[in-house]
Length: 137
Image (cartoon, rainbow, N blue to C red; front, side, top):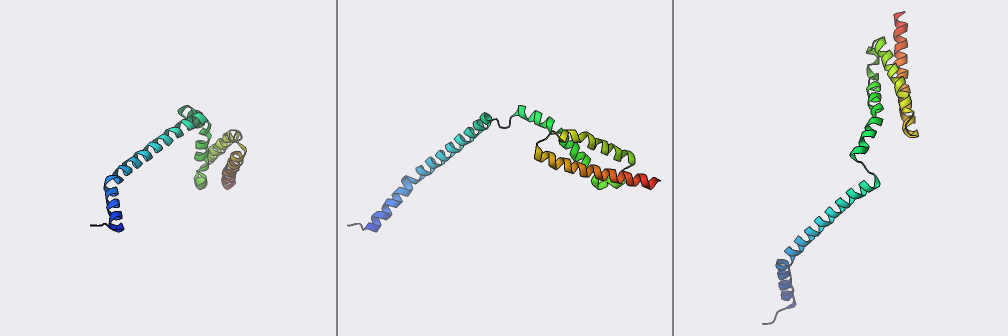
């Protein structure tokens, strides 16, 4: 009995699928996992070698950014400025004054942005304080 080309081809692919394909999938998965692990470890070492984030570097950054939390606390209260007493407004204006030298130490672009925002916060508090003083007279 003679086999046709279609039968031979079908027989070959059936044999290939059952014999070799599971091995190829397992080898492919193992290769992909190995490559991903290698790239992940290489990435960690490159970050350390280049001077990326580390535990010791985060402490000075946190100390440098302490002004930011104070800035956020002071300027977050502008919505409530009319409800504050004169003493509270005076305190907020004083706190704005203590923030200015710290912000002036920043790089140019951040200094420009934060000084302008601080100027606006302080200006609002000054305006409200003046209005409250005139109101008392």
